[in-house]
Image (cartoon, rainbow, N blue to C red):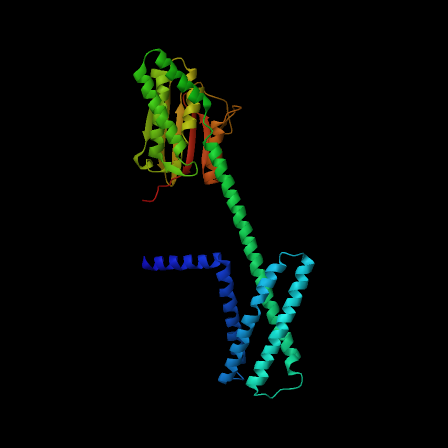
Length: 367
């Protein structure tokens, strides 16, 4: 546990390092020049082991560390210019810094390491200038490479953020498409109860409607809720509908105990039940029956809503009804949340009616 905590802290520190461009530059800048000193010393160790040579390498690396700092600010300005001006500025500034660094290295080598012994034009020693240009050119290449990488990562993050926001907005749009017919019918029923002086029943219906709407609006459509909580809200909805239909609406429940804690999209069953009441129960003069079943099969949660209504036209496991919103809405939400790891089918119930079946991953919230 302590090891995991330390590892997590270390990862967090590294994330903070890479999120801070200022700190990241100084770390990479220093590590890069320190690495140059180490590699250069290892490459020269076979033929030069005196401590004075290590001192010269440290001086040269420190000089490179100092001289390349202005390049950062020059390149930062150049990146905002046109391509031609950018290339000109990078080439000229890189050459000038390499030239100055070559002179510094020659001073260190001939005046300190060789104790004043030097050839003619020692300060413009050609091979040293070429080596310096290559090194400073590598520094410039790494600078622009890292900057371009950061820019690409930032664009990817922005694109991912925009995609996530669009995804969430789409889910919310699907989730909040409340059927106005339900509200109209409920309010109309409450009005009728008031006119009939059945004030206690009307008050109970208003209370249930308030609780149901509070539940439907308070729950974030992006998150999931326990099935038990979803069933509780569905019972509220059906109690409201029972005031309208009375004995004409019969509901049977078969919810397995280990399904109560399964996480499901909020308000995933209500549109199915509403669809059954609208197109099945309301069409039967004697009323009808709804059956709501929740079971577990392996790693899947299975939900079924069946009615004994007059049935419907079904094609390829989906209703052929035109203009419906509820069931296509559910399918889109399931696809957005589970990608392809779900099933949503509509079939004929036996002996009559329609059965809607859902399959989704069985997931329980961590305690």
